Image 1 (cartoon, rainbow, N blue to C red):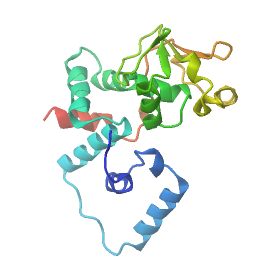
Image 2 (image 1 turned 135 degrees about the horizontal axis):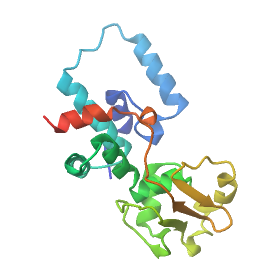
Image 3 (image 1 turned 120 degrees about the vertical axis):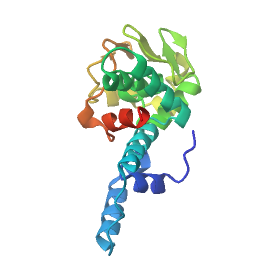
Image 4 (image 1 turned 90 degrees about the vertical axis):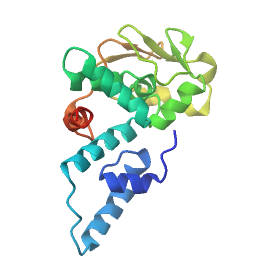
Length: 202
């Protein structure tokens, strides 16, 4: 999915929502620009702040407006903690699971390897980034794809990669088992999940 000028978007949102804006070079560039400003930025309204949080989340997970809205609506109508349910749904996407597994280094790359048929779920090819992984699912790289240069260093990388607790990695089989509900600590988020729910509940 194309989002337009990523540097400009990240600058407007004030968060490194894209891989290319998570570099030291970008951080230093932003720091210099802030230091050179002679006027204070105009204060945003409460509504404007919530829009920004929503956009941060949407861009972070690489989702379109309607697609992201559907995740929120489903979380709200499901009984339980809406913020936890929303985060779990987003983290359960196959492209996100591939990213968290350590197979690739960015969500855009994860989406690419999924849509190109490099990833298997329970031994079967799945080309849908939005597929919701479930407890017990086995994620692996297609046998024919393992020889590809993009996966050539995966074995060495996985020896030091810190796999999240909801994924169990088997180095011998080169597969990842979903052993818990996919989630992420709110402290690791670039956005305020509460503000997003408030935005959609208005």
